[in-house]
Length: 376
Ligand SMILES: *Cc1c(COP(=O)(O)O)cnc(C)c1O
Image (cartoon, rainbow, N blue to C red; front, side, top):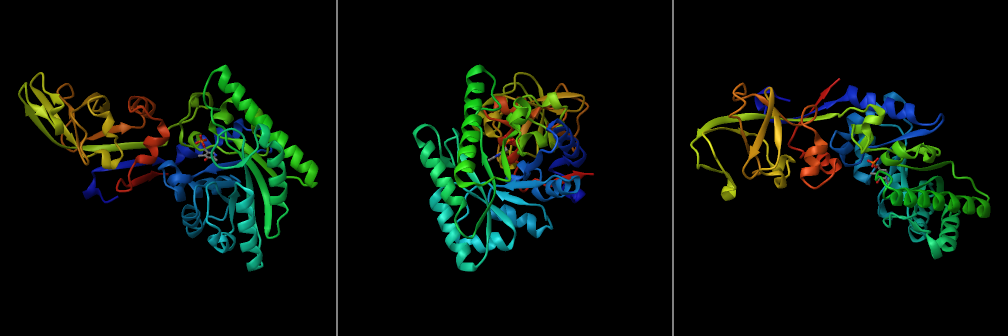
């Protein structure tokens, strides 16, 4: 980052990502592969930088959401296996094959399209079969009355020409949520997953090389569900409902600077909508961060940020590019000083809760105009 532009930036700690990777890895059963989920620019941390680190560390696999994300990694020199979790139109089958990218197949009709495209090219597309065991999103239906049809459709998909099935997976809806009901739901999803696999393998005389289902929640709470590969995202970046169990560390610090400081008399209103009125003579700082940088406007008047030796309450509506903080009780903070929005001292979990969202959303919302600065 050009020092002259020092406005707002995200400090990414590669050592902390490495630490988290090793801590998660150590908690997995021996022989279990590690797939690092680096979709959405590695949850805002920079997909290429995180992927390079995982490649150097010896992780086995990466997953992204779409073809463009996969191509960015290939273009950046990543040679590890990459799985696309989302849909790719069959017109891109050749691009997938030529870049050695694996595609999720979530229905028989899609398997047939990819098969036709690959066969026409005289090439083979490597795929992972996705089962819908209760997330009700992508995947072959297989719950309840759909079980028979699910087995049938998966068995037909994996036998199509031009396709090579390397894995099978499913995704949990509540593996990160406490409570008996959630545990029962997760266990039922897992049972359906393994039952369907067993039935397909029996009928098709086939073995899926890699069975995987453990997202961050399952890595933490259901280690017995690791199977052949774990698939954590959020944990890698230091968050999760119980991340302290593994001693994980946050990897992103969102930092901004004080643009100016002014003194206002009591009764002075601040920002759009005049939603904050000074109750005392107030030393108000303007921060160079707004909702277009990824600081949700819903946090207006409801949060505080680490500044100087303490915290400064945010005042008035958060604007697109700026917001205000009360520095009256923080006389040690001056123009140009850094203020931490979240990271080490300001807890992202707390901000997410106030905003009525989850840490995932705040991490991926850090906008691209916010430069990422990596510490090695
Ligand atoms: C995003 C995603 C993950 C990672 O989830 P975390 O909760 O971040 O661990 C794993 N699997 C699939 C299919 C996903 O879409």
